[in-house]
Amino acid sequence: MSFQDWIFALHLLTAATLVGSLVMSWIVVVALYSVETADETLSLNRVALVGTATTVAGLAGTIAFGIWLAILHDAFQVWDGWVIVAIALWAIATVALLRSFVESAKPAGRARALVASGQTGANTDLAALNRTKTGLLLRALASAAVVLIVIDMIWKPGA
Amino acid sequence: MPELIAAIRPDEQSFALLLHLVGATVVFGALLASATSLALARGETRLLRLGYFSLLLVGLPGLILMRLAGEWLYRLQGWDDLPDQIEQPAWLGIGFVVADWGGLLFLASLALGGVGVHRLRNGKGSAGLLKLTMVIALILIVAYIVAVWAMTGKPS
Image 1: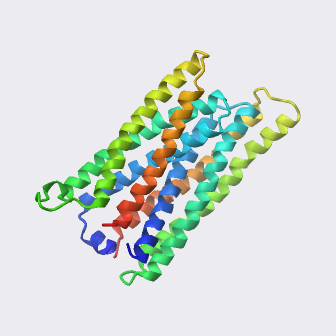
Image 2: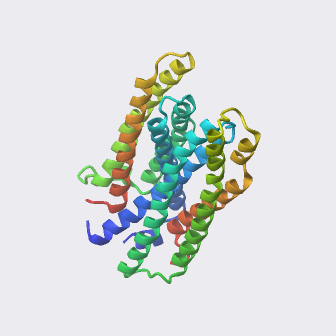
Image 3: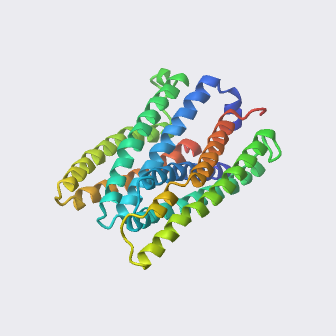
């Protein structure tokens, strides 16, 4: 395997990590939907934090190795149309995901406050935070952008 | 040469590849969610159940999609028509080993986890079985990483 092959493999490994982490985060979001207690919210938050870390690693690796690959490769450039589209979609996914992490932190913060005050039973405010639409919409936007990146990478329109 | 291959890849093959990738990343995400939930459960029923049902409800459909789309792509690219004297490339062999033997391991983890979740529901000890499910999920995560490396780097 050449150095360029290794960069390509790392680009796709981090891309797989990113998409896999998104799938994982959807599993946690769906599981949170029926949670009403602080303890269970914090338990799922532990799993979500691992998903956040792998998502950030996937986002950083995908763009870094992707641009490196475009620089190394003679056949395509960073300013090619399909590459620019992919970078724009990556930026949209990144902003949406970073915002969704902020939204995900809200129920965890509320759950910690409830535990600190000794309220461990079902709580309607916490349940509402766990079902917030904002985080869901941001995650859906990011997921749509990532799916479009995969389609763009496979078909390479204009290449 | 991947961009050249992409340029000459018919749309039907691109669609099969898209389905193969979607299936693979769905099963990878389910394995990540399962292994993480089971590892961090500390005996909590909700996380133990999440770990198992991630595999069953998300991972299994992803695995089936990945395997079927992979087979479709294999036939579309004519790998099934290779003359006997030409050997299949190593990266394809690695992909089959991970998909098929990994698939059997995946089914074994579902069976073990299923018994574990059933015992959990009946208030019996299930820690060992679900720990084994987690270990298998971790082994499969490593196997999938190797498969992605082999399929993209095509070492042979």
